[in-house]
Length: 305
Image (cartoon, rainbow, N blue to C red; front, top):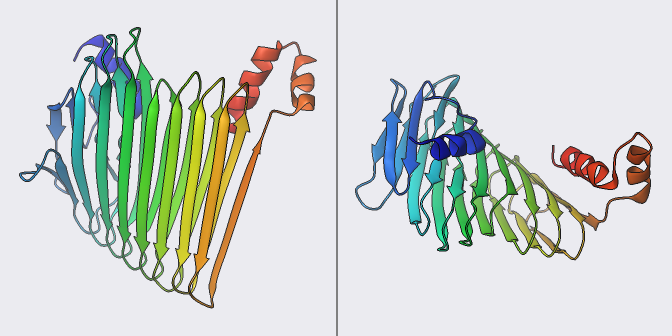
């Protein structure tokens, strides 16, 4: 891999060298490296472009990395990745996409990830999006995530997009079984004329299931953001949706939370807050010697941690 591709890997997957354990690295639409373990298999799909990641039941403390990098202008990449997490397994999955576009053509990656989380399995999923380049071409990423969690299963998703993505639409749909849990933490920052849309839909079908969807975002300059969430309580369950955004300059932020209870014991809450940086926060930091710009950066960084 060249230096640009290595830099992208560091940004989206925190990889400074080839990872230990299972991994599949995709570069410019082709496989750039793969490794499996005794408990984690990665198989190329025959029906469409993508892979199946198969994690054996009761696998413990293992990880799998599946980053995607695009370093050529004009690449249009689309993958379908399915994850099969066996009963009682405990794993960390690190995904993400990085684009370096130095040309004048659009570079785009669309990924559809489907998670089949087995009974009492526990999964942490980390997905980072990052773009860079000194050309006029746009960087576009549209991730779609489909989640099915069986009885007692647990999935925690951490999604981050803080630089260089001109347009993105993130769509997540989930269905929870008895006692299942879905936790999502989203962090987004947009600037210039960038746009970002998020759509979450969770069907809480299982008795005693739980979900928490939390979005933190910062919109700068003339960028646009839309957050939509729809939690449907179809059984005895608890659900929480929260969108908290900082708006700056001439940006626009729209939050559209929705909750629907179809069961007497469905307990659902939604919260949404959009506002500017408080003046007293800036003044306090500026009295410590920071410029106004430095103070804003400190506040934004702390907000998105």
